[in-house]
Image 1 (cartoon, helix red, strand yellow):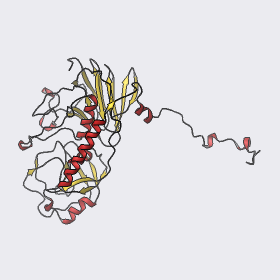
Image 2: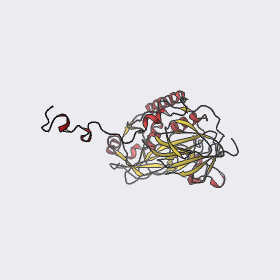
Image 3: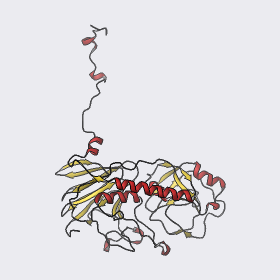
Image 4: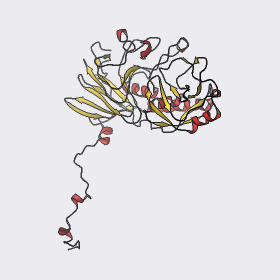
Length: 363
């Protein structure tokens, strides 16, 4: 890391924080995992800039994040369905996601908006952060992680400067084929307290549609849909929870816990989202409709292994970016021509009295 090289946050967007693989092994004493909501995005972004797969990254929601290189060149990469822009020499240039880019001193990267999903991850070459309980992940509720010191546990804000390495000068890298969108149902394993619900409620959970509400953050996602009826008491003696657990409070509307969730709770848990689908659920936008499908634990483990194999294949496909100076992905995706006309529109058809005479007959 170079002492003078920094990545300055010009604007944090909707919510941006420093995350990594999470703070594992401490839930027994009440410390949540935290860490990125979608580990596949983190691993891809880090490999694109040459970091270790679980190195700290910037996780952001929707658009609005703006970052500027200060004191030297900084290499960054964005994973996610994001529309990007680079400001250099007073001009704004579109940039495709799923690739690395070296920002020269003073150049600005903007995450303008996201397409599918609400999460994007920005990796920074050589981003070095203090480690607390084995992780640099920001956990705002306990003031852990992030930049450390007086800024411990703080989400990113304008003016913060992140310590980065001077860009290595290695060839830029690209992920040729980003992971396809998966619109299938979210797979769940029933339990551990499925017997606290009526047969009708258990059936509804996998037959009905549920909508993601605006109450969705790093702690959990509230869903709305048909009421899931409790068979008995609506609360239990508090017991352990894990990210992916689907709690059902007294109003019968499910809550899916995510990385920053509490480690224990008193709402019965009707099912748990399998690890292979948890990142996909966390990326659902408010208003998006989803369905659940039940699998058993054995199938959930098989799907987790399959998802890991897919991720390994994606990471292995990362290659040097050819044709520096021309970003073909952005070129093909961009609308490069203004003032396009439709050759068959009425405006450009020959006048009747020119080719066909006043009565429309051929002359």
